[in-house]
Image (tube, rainbow, N blue to C red; front, side, top):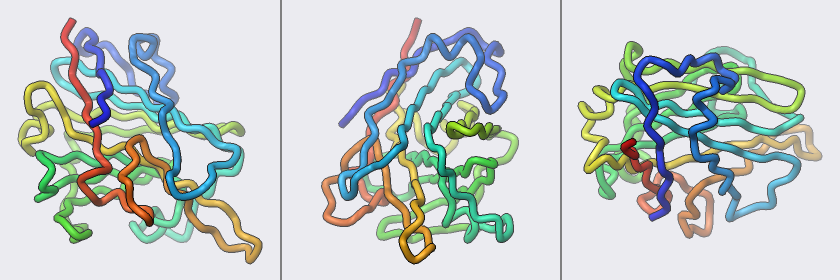
Length: 213
């Protein structure tokens, strides 16, 4: 499994703004190893960083993209589901029974749900709001999504084992077609080795390793 090292920082120091511009982010490993195994990616790049302290796991996506697509029909999951977004999936183990999904668009609207194998989704489940903070920022060059997840909530969901969190890192990028509709290209850190795009599968996950000082 691919492994990303999450460096440790002093507690209560990193400030979430949505821009990922806190100086402490300089301590993070920059992950740019994203691609689409199924289609060509055009004119866009994906960057991910993570840090942690005693209380929180921090994450930041920075997306280079001059043609952001956001469906503004309403604030429903249906609208988020057909917008550009970044995603984090967490699982206790490879059985995916269950796993937990955070999908965040550039505004940042959140689609969070619990899932079981074979894309059995429970949209009535939500990550506790007091344990998750997300912010975002949009520019003419792209967007960033920055957030923090409480360590206690990750532990309560049985997601940290031996300082490792099994995680999928993904992105959906919508391109306008010749028929003026929008179709997604699916971008991932880990190639799941599937013929068709599918992130809801055991082989799409890597590991976030919580490093000690």
